[in-house]
Image 1 (tube, rainbow, N blue to C red):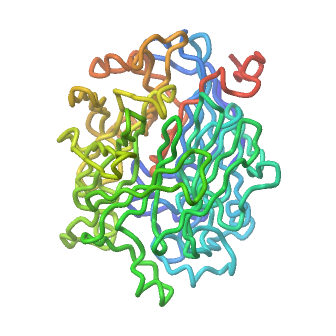
Image 2: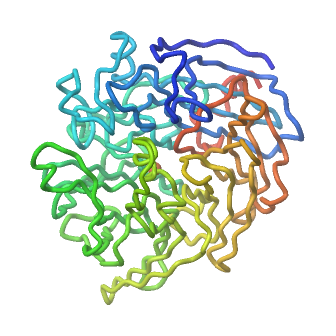
Length: 500
Ligand SMILES: [Fe+2]
């Protein structure tokens, strides 16, 4: 392996740190590296062409009081593939908050589990204000460039998908709604080149929806009025519609009136799903009601006759029973998909009758589902999701859900080995939905190393066809994406696929 050190972040974390989400599989990285001539067990498929991008949380300073794993600074990992070879890079996203805290040498903003009123900085980002925009939640490709985002809303940071250099913020030719920002999970439609997004805040109308075209023009931006501040996390789209949500888990209004941010689930309030023509107006929004739940992630949506079919992970217990334990155990039960009871679920929204139907698709508990992005907005059959060990926000295996038959094919990483959100990479010239590869990065606690694993998407249980060793054990994190080479700016330039 040929490794080059690209940079090092200043860190003030204690050497004897014992925080459960800053140690073990969540041990942050502070060194940035580039590597080629990677050691490979098996064979990298020659028709795998593009870059797997993964965003992770990497704290560099102790929290003011209570660290939450979503507070860490965004670091993107890239594993690129061309002609059967691979390269690797990891870089911090140079957010305004990261740069300011590197200069200050300590935390300048309160985290998710802390009172934003105690932030040393009077200004900040996010739906609740005075937070750091760590840009650490999600990463998507749009117009050939990677965009990182933050779940509490913030700027979209533009990164080269190959060098991971931060290229600034998305401004969409000066039309970016920077007062509210953009939530995590903007959605890219490969067929039209459009990016759909939403944002939310504590100010009426509480949510907006927008579309950016393939030339970076903000072509749609509308109010989505809600009854009050809400905590939407994800959206979905079909060929002609966007689907937003108003779910009955939100900041308790009486606490919010006192400046406190306490999430509560209201089991007597229905789930509400908004269907909006992709370029529609506020007056075009149609709302549907469904059983109360919280949905962190949708897998996809599509049109079928008069119906919008929506698929995602229904939470049986949006607020898991406390069960006591330490402060951290009580806090982090909300991150355990086993306690939340997340199952793949299908909603059917009838545009003619205004009625909805819903059904559970499987008894397998999973979350963080990805599909072949060529099928986004169109009828899909397969999704590739993560299973979790009890009590932890970690992924101990992957599961391929077949929404047609309800079957689930599983692969377990093994004791002490944890994967990342697994992206589906269609094979060059693919002819079927699952004709391609699954790509993930593991954190192996037994061998203190990370590998990038490649599976055949049509034979998941057979295990990886290639294991590529990375220079350092990677911290666990949240979201990832597959950036096909044909959609990356300059990928055809032989020097773009670094060192290959
Ligand atoms: Fe997410």
